[in-house]
Every structure is written in structure tokens, then in C-alpha cells.
Length: 309
Ligand code: GLU
Image 1 (cartoon, rainbow, N blue to C red):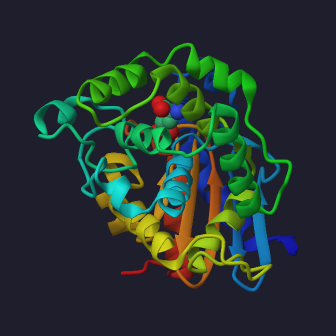
Image 2: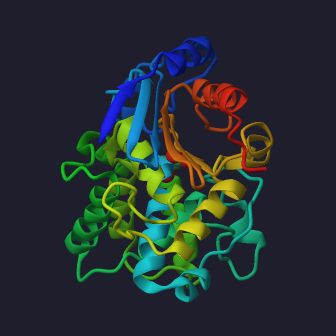
């Protein structure tokens, strides 16, 4: 794999960086407050195996909600779409990612999609394995295969910080357990979920993982089919309709690519049959999307014209 610094991308980073001062770090997970709000990094991983990067590209960050795409791909591949979509829907909500509102008004109380917290918690509850250790290790192996880095791990401090403060996510779990949408022990689901959210990587690894989705589930370097074509398609579709929280419509309009963001400030972008993109900048807008990261993707779209629409 050849990765190179790109002057062109660096110019776009320079243009987008000032926007980071308008955003705010997520603070409801206490350890996320330690991030440097002025960080901005980007990498593009092309399907010929080459990649380019700019900004603070070595900086590692946690996946947070980006992991929802990966747990979905994994669970769909392991247990099949019928079982998954019995418990979680396919529609955008227009609500904030951690909202409980629609669970109460939708009958049955099945979350509208797997990109909101309620839906992602259902997906995590479906990760197969004899016990929590096996569930976690097999899932982590999948992430390591996707990034090509066997050292990928989770940030324990961050995981513990979220695990000890996740009252709302526990509430979502208990609500859904009451309604028979999730089975199993809530504390175990929460441990697995906070671990998957705390998995750390840099923008290069995120871009490489995105390239697998761009390449219809096939690793562009090794040629290995890691995710079945149909499942990669389902994930990209959810990324377009629900990937950027309740700003997914605006993002589709302004950037126009499958993408998923997380409250750490990471954004995974996928340009089908072209490349994967990893972006990171931790200062967020009011809906939870990276402010400078979003701006950077807008500038990139103006320059490279990558909207799929
Ligand atoms: N771990 C975070 C939570 O569940 C992820 C949220 C996000 O990135 O949107 O609150």
C-alpha cells in the first residue's frame, strides 16, 4: 500500500480548519472532552490500493456511531437479514440519535433504523457468540480484517467513561427488553456496545475500511470478499438515509455520498466504486456531526465532484 501526503488535500484542510472553532466537543461521555478541538485530518483510500492524506492524519479517535455500520454488516453476515429486520426497521427518524420518543409511539416498539442508538443497541444484542468474550473478540477480528491492521483495539478509559454514564442507552435497552425487542442482559449489551463505540483508529484506517464498502465488500488490496455484496449495499443505503443523524437529508444534498458520523468527530465516507474516505475533527455542530469535517467534505465535493446523485 502506498500512502502519500497530498498538497491539494492540505489546501482543503486549511480552508476547513477555521470552522472547528465554531463547534463544541461532545461532553456527555466525559472522556471525549479530552480531545483537541482544532484537530482535522482526512485520508482517501482508492480502489487501486493507493491513498492520500492531509492534516493531523496520525491522530487516533474512537469510532462511536461509525461502529453502527460495522456491527450491522457483521450481524447481517452472521445471522441473516430476516432476523435482524424483524427487530429493527429501515426508515429515517428525523429525531436526535439518542431519542426514545419514537419507541413509544411506534407499534411494535421496534427502532426505526440501525443507525440510531436504539437500533444499534438491538444490532449489538444480536452479535453471536457463546459469551461476551467470544462476541467481542470475533467482532474485533472483523474490524481488524476490514482495516488490515491486527492491532486495532478499543480505548479502555473511554469505554469505562461511557459505560459508567450511559443512563439513556440503558433506558433504551430496558424499554426494548420490556417490549420483547431485545433479549439478554442489558449490562452485557452495554459492555459490548461501549466497547464497539470505543474502538480507535486513524483516518487512514477508516478510509481503508471505507474502501471495502466502496468496492462492494471486497478488500481492494487482498481481493478478499469480506462483506457479501448485498450487505455492503444495505449498509451504504442506510448511510445515505440515516448516516449523518437528523441532518442526513442536508448532507445528501450538499455532499451526496454514503457517510456515517460519530460524536467523536469521525466521519466515514464511501464513494461507490471509487474510494473510501476517513475524516476526523472533534468539534461538533448541534446535531452531533463534525463541523470542520462536514465542511471539508463539502469542499472536497466541490473540487472532485463525488456526489453520487
Ligand atoms: N457511544 C455513543 C452513544 O451511544 C455514540 C453516539 C454517536 O456517536 O452518535 O451515545
